[in-house]
Structure formats: C-alpha cells, structure tokens
Length: 425
Image (cartoon, rainbow, N blue to C red; front, side):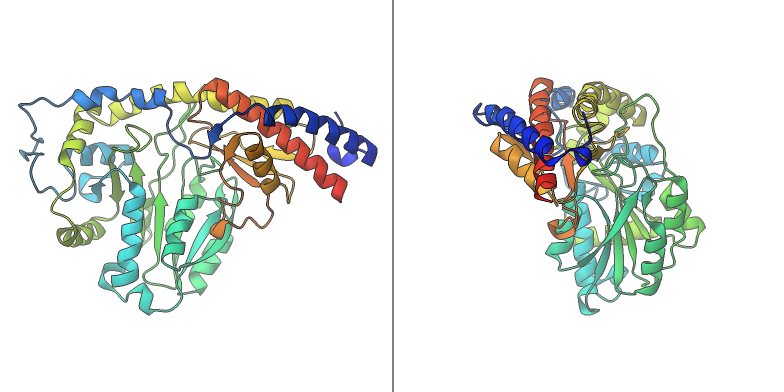
C-alpha cells in the first residue's frame, strides 16, 4: 500500500470509509479489553505461589537471629539486603529494604527533602519554586509525585542513549532551583531505552549549581530482560564516588514485577553516609518493616542467582507477547509513513508514536471499540504531550488471544486517525 502522504484525497476518502466499516464491527462486538498499565499477568504471579507456604511454623528467624515476627530491623533483614546488594553490585550497608512499593520510597524521600531538606539542609519548600528535570516520554508516576509537591517539571528529550545530556548538564549547572532528575536507566518506561555507558558516566560527573541536587535513579526493570543477551549499565553509585559526588544519587529497585506486585519487597540504595542518615530518620517513622514478607522472599529465592533464574521464567511468558506486538505493528503499519515504535529488549512497555496530533484520537477510537489504553499524554509532565503523538502500549497482562484482538483494533484506530488527519489538512 502507498504511504498515506502519497495518497490523493479520493484515495484517502475511500480508505477512510473502508476503515470505518471495519471498525464498526469491533464497536458492536461489546469487547472489554484493558491494556492501561504494565502489570504482571496471572501466569506470572503464579510463579511465586510457593512463596505463600515456604515458611515453617518453627523457624521465623533471620540469619542474624532476628525473630521476624517481632519489632526491629529497620533497614531490612540481612538475607534480602544481600540479595539486592548482589543484584545491584553493591554492599549490604548501601541498601535499605522497604515494603512492597518503591514508589512509596521515592515519595517519602521527596517529601522529607521538601519539608526538612536534604540531610537536614534548607527545606526545599523554603527555598522558592523547586524544579525537577523529567526525561520524556517517561514514567507518569514520577510526574505525579512532582505535581503533588508543586514541583515544576522541565521535560528533557530522550534519545537512543538516554536523556539529552547536553541539556541536562547545562540546566543542572546553571539553575540552583533544579533539585532533581527522574531516571529509569534500564528498559526505560515507556521506551525500553537502556542508558549508554557514556550517559551514565556523564550523570556521575554532573556539577550542580544546587548542593542539594539529587538523581532519582529508578532501576525498576533492572532484572527484566526479554532475550538471551541481558543489557548491563555501569554502577552509578561507584561512578558518583569516583567523581566526587558520593551522596548525589538515590537508586531504587523493586521485586514488584518479580514476585507479587501487591506484596513484594523493594530497596533504596545510596552511599553508606546517605543510608546512615536515612536509618536515623526511620527510627521516627516506623518500629520495623514486614520482616516475615522479607523472609518469605529470602527463603523462596535464596540468593541473587535464584532471582535471575526466576526472571528467565518471566521472560518466557512475556517474550511471545512482545513479539506479537512488534509483529502486528510491522505487518499492519510498516511502510505507511504514519507510525514508529520501539522494539525493547526488556521492561514492560512498547512506546508508540503516531502522526502528530493523533494520539488522543487513537485512544478515543480504541475506547469506543472496547480497548482501554493508557491516556495519551500520560508519559509527559502534566499529561501534556506537545506533539500529541506518544502512546504507551502495555502488553504484559492480557492473555495472548485478548492482546491479539486489542492490537488489531489499535492498528485500525491508527490507520483511521491518520486518514482523518490527512483529509483535514
């Protein structure tokens, strides 16, 4: 088929009528398909069902003798601290284990910095209008945290190697009100981009105008490769140490898509000095975490190698779904000049870019046919995509048959919205 840009008005009009006819059949089918969020499927969750029965009635003690039924252990039991440390190439005293939500750890950290300052420095809220750099398209929940604390967001364009570091370096060095940047360095949400070694090194060498500037390094998908070759990124904590910025980065990671999304374990990692400061704060915040859940994870996975072996099972479930997405998009849309998309080697999403001005229309058309997508613009600060082109496809949860139906509807919607755009030009 011709590219849409090469079609005459009569050809586009005929195509539009044909697409509308095909689309109406889906609208009448009464389908209800949900691909709004990147959540694990039932099949993935079932991989950890044995974790629910792996504790015995006689042994609730951690390796250091802590009774996990009782108080204490603010920064996590030794077994889980070591698992995270080994996975992230750190030492256990650089790791604080949290509950089931790494997002809660990020929110808490920003909240403390707003109200009490970084390491008891001047509170952000008393300094003026705080700003964060937000690589975009990016993770909508990061942007929601900024909105909650009335932090201005500055979008930073993403390339194949990560954020535009020329812009990042310039802004961070020139504006003392820029206090942070959100990063998803490995299999980035939603693009699947893996930061290049050079990008990570440039982050570690940043010279911020603000002494209380921090990098929020959300390594949520660190263990979520899809293929045989696993991507690796440099150790940002070590690089920051080497470049005289030992306390500049907070690393977050999570088992939310490794074990049970609602009952996992997470961690925050940073310099030993930062971790000691945070542990002092935790004495005012909690009497202790859910150590039984931590112990379940330690007994089930045993060690970092056990986690990585487990993730091979996840990859086997997810690979066919991601292949279905890329195969369908290529078959239906390749060569038409109306879309482009990522082909990630890990993570939970495919990032799709339509013609400018079409994303909202595509999402609406899909909703009319019973397919729920993440709202257009969600991957940008304040929900505003300046091009109205980016859509996050989340293929992980639906069964393959439902995903196939959703993708067929999606491709029809893309074609129809594109034809409408050219006809209205």
